[in-house]
Image (cartoon, rainbow, N blue to C red; front, side):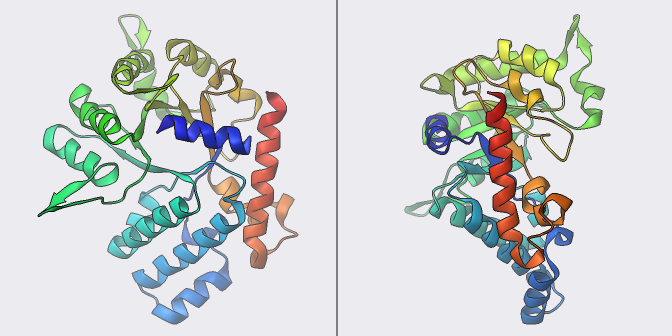
Length: 305
């Protein structure tokens, strides 16, 4: 699967990923009102607003980018109706030729982890039929429970040619409370990185592994260390833009071949129309504002490499 993502990155010349993390506050008023008029002030009405918002953004950006990353929590907050829209969004993005990274941060052990892996990446047997649940291409995985928690996901990656991105060094301010703690004189994130390489060796897809790593743009010095530790691991890089990461901060995430990382931006793209830079588009043309924000992000990143 990682080879498919790389092919799309090379084709678009855009190592970027749009985070489809829709909060109701991001959705223009006219979109919300139309959905609530049809379905009332209900969870279904809120979910419909999310769907219309997502569709507009995807329609305006799919030809510029290789991948999207829907954050499942933004859909789960609306219950079953939200999950229906999550699945609808996944399917629509794949129809548009995009690689879909489900930001689900799952992690458990044994049969529970295997069920998560089957539901999001693999398939289940129902009588004589084999059916897929959410059917995303990649998901994010929390490694806190160790190999017991990650192996079922890695197994599905190998069997179904899917991928995962394991949390290694995240972009949030308090990530260091655990991730930077020293164990035998080394920070925990380095030890996790070495396990990611170990897990990934079982599911190589060309030069890179289907087991990737989440490495935040907000800690460039750490990303330099992690790139050396994980030369054949693809990085999913959050933290660019709204969280403070710059294009210059990204340089250590990439390898000398110009590959090795895909950079995510969520509200910086999907809520671009709210920014002063793009306010001329107005709420009525929020999709066009998102398209311009993607073009600017791609140019900014490519400027550095």
